Image (tube, rainbow, N blue to C red; front, side, top):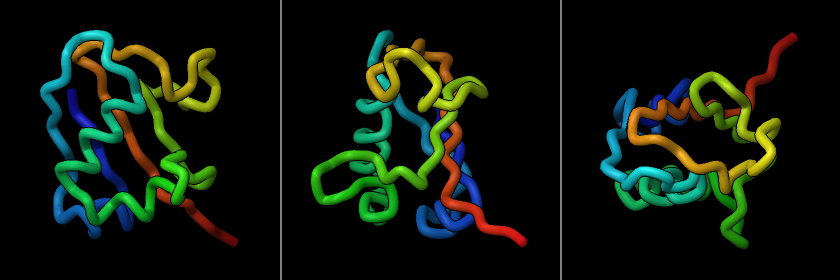
Length: 92
């Protein structure tokens, strides 16, 4: 399983990708927690004090926004899943 990082998340982690070896049917939440164990510097940027994903962090699973999936962060993943994690983006 791969997590692709973008923009400031990439800079904070010092890498474009985090590779995970999680069992089949692990959830999006478990994948994010595993990634945060590998790159703890991302934790305050991804999670609040209660351990919930910040509303401004966007996570896509195989191109689908996790916020639109019926199970959200509890969505089970296949080992071939690709997660994309985007920081907030502002423009004008």
